[in-house]
Length: 170
Image 1 (cartoon, one colour):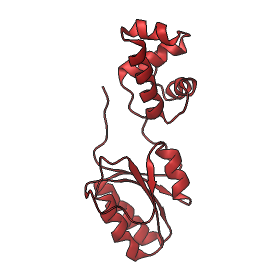
Image 2 (cartoon, one colour):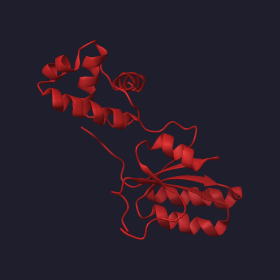
Image 3 (spheres, helix red, strand yellow):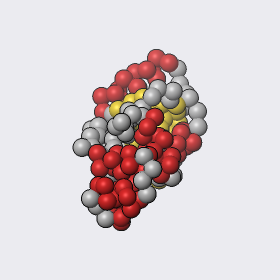
Image 4 (tube, helix red, strand yellow):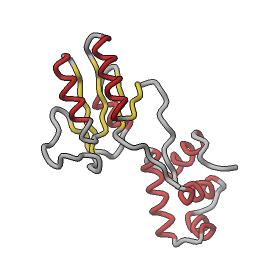
């Protein structure tokens, strides 16, 4: 079963929001500057907003943008008092974490974890598919989805990452 948090996810960084966005949200289109006017609800759009707040006046613009449902990476370069108030406001509408804090483990459906577990045990793709009672094509698709969810490029990396996160049983 896959579970997700409601609302957008916001990462607060000390510098380089674009680089952090690429690393935190792999495969997503990174938007800098302003957000697109349409659609208003950006929760289903495959994008992440990377922006820097340098003046207190920009806080409202960023808060309004995030309230549209977009995931964001924000670099805050203002005095600590308004910055903390801004982060407190963000927490009302989004899941907020600071760089250096571990994020939640990615959600990985049991079917995906089972295939990764079989691969970890040394099974070929065909053997893992047979063990899961699915076609080779379905197994390959599920492994691709697992790689995306774990933010890695290869199945070997996915096995290592899932093992590190404790997502594989045994």
